[in-house]
Length: 540
Image (tube, rainbow, N blue to C red; front, side, top):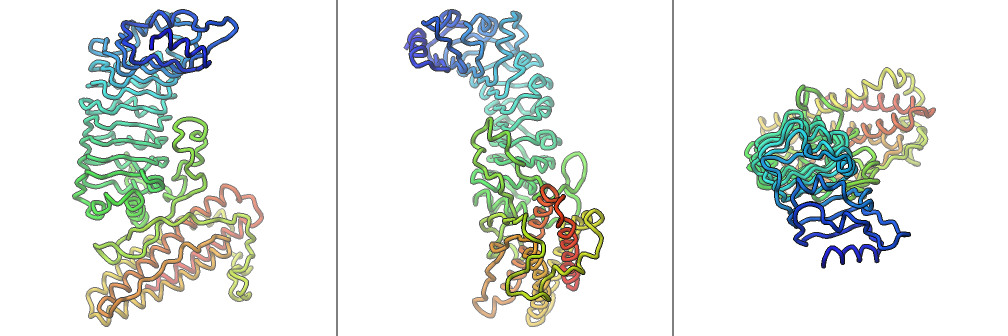
């Protein structure tokens, strides 16, 4: 079909996309596009998308003639020039554009596809200078060898998607890429990358989808943990030996089946991760989240050592408000209210009865934010069993104790759990009979502490039905010690679940209920209950 026939079809159907790809168009702008396209003076066509892919267009000529196109293209937002031959010498840049008409037209573009165009060896600092509104840029498989450090500076406040895949000679990324704070989709696959900048994750915190597959990366920067909105991460076919501890904060990676892909990496420094690499995103993130949750001490996050907020706080893309309205639409169905919690487990890993185990992730806790603080634990409890006795509220109000609650949940409980792990390990040094008795004592000490949290959650109106784990039953007497260790592990996992879910509850309270009459009482109740809980566990 010729260009004229395509234009006739455009008029007939009143389309806003003109597809003239694969028509062997040569040189610059086709003369048919410099004249009014409408065959009816009373009909005004507005072309939003123009597809000129897989022709023989010469860029330099096309860019300068772009301003001479008819008024129907004055609203053009999407331009596809992929699959056209290179015509830029050693590098492609837009500084050759001189006419005001062409500058104005390039300034209106939102999406530009130059995939497979062989732009030359270099992108200069002026390559994108007339693309002030660009949101999506595709320059994959263009034989690039170098990108000037300031090449992406003109796009730093607008660019949302960048596809650089297939430029295997690139080796590194320019510093100006880290200034693109709006970037949500970044594809750097097959770019020959050996390493990423230390502040990569700290600068690109808006990223939802990151493709680093088929490179030569041996490690990721610690700052990856700052990419709290990350929903998809492809690391397949690199040289990675272990993942940084901080990646456990990227909990969105475990919420969908693509999630995280680490297949094809040696992972020689982490056998547990190596074991899970082909078992899906939920099992990989199950381990990574537990690892950072149970970690004692500061977590490296790139540039400085700091302990960040719990992964449960502001870890998911907060409301996905932008994603529901604009690109990329594939994230619009991700649940707005879902908040990841530590997955449950019914068995321990093969390496140790007490190591984090894998299973599917249970649903998020359901909050009744309007529940009455004076609600009984259940209808059968009498007043003596109701922990919401008025005497509990004689302790200081929320302002002095809120920080102390955070310390208990983020630091103290982790320390106690570490001590319990160590106590279980020490039982290996005694006879089997004494070891069994010691393990039973540890388990029996954990149980009443858990009951404190059960009562607290009931009074706060937090549903915990899905927190219940089925304890494994010993198949024979020889495995009894191993099974008791598994039960203790399940008890500790439940404590971790309670701790992280309570952090989420407090975050909701601070955000939505801080002005309610019961807010002070709730905070005081939480503080008192946590003190009782930790005092019971400290007996181990």
